[in-house]
Amino acid sequence: MSSLGIPTLSNLLGGLLTQLPVLAVLLVGVLLAVTRWNRHPRASALLLAGLVIQLVVGLLGLGLSAVLPWLVGSIPGARVGVILQLVTIGRSLISAVGWGLVLAAVFADRGERERR
Image 1 (tube, rainbow, N blue to C red):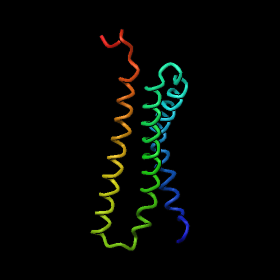
Image 2: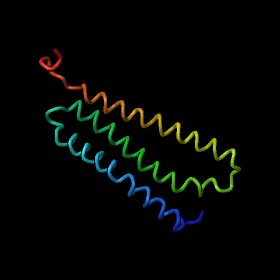
Image 3: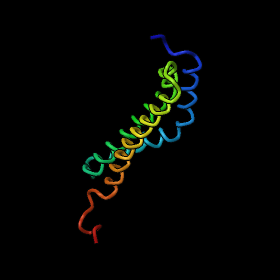
């Protein structure tokens, strides 16, 4: 296997720059979850898990979008389409789990007063 070429590296960096605002929001959410852990442990754990999943999916997605064309370069076009669809479905399902955890965090650790 050869190393990544300059076009691939520039695509990766360009993708990272375009996703920087989203990644920054996710990192701020991680910091908030960690700093509020003592007051809301369950909500913070759910939020932290969901946001870490989103960070991993996002970063892996950036890496895959840069590397996958290089990896499937020798595979016929029809198979590349199937591979890309499977990768997209997998990323979507994992991302849905992450957002589900974030949503669960919104409703976790509610006191009796807040439930009324």
